[in-house]
Image (tube, rainbow, N blue to C red; front, side):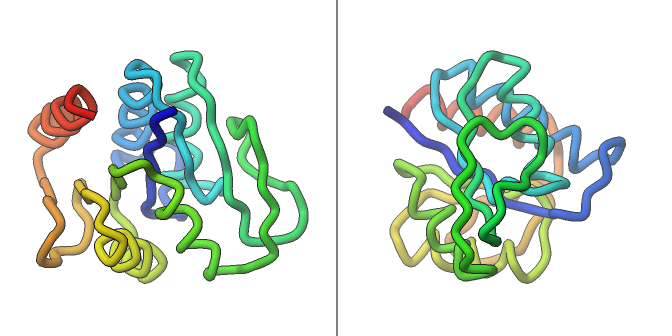
Length: 152
């Protein structure tokens, strides 16, 4: 089973460009038959999960709290009770690909852990860090992601 982790801006509102890009990412992941893993909450996590569900995909949320409260598009809820420390689990769950869409310091920590673990990290409007392939153009980003998913 191939697993892709999607990380990013938890504050991106439903109508925002980051949310919509994340939704398309989720669709692409599901179309390739991969399981989608996120932190299970709002923003990019919700957008990606929503897109995956729209394509009939399976979604997993590694939640920061002990409750199973998540966005409505998470199939499997894993209440970790670990707060931000759950970021390691989110990215280590990926078979080899982590996708970052926007994001702040939580995303930065996930990118660092992903790179440390040898994962491929591709991003859209996220942190400019050595080792990550970051894109500012949506079409270029989605095309590259599609290519990575095909070679998976």
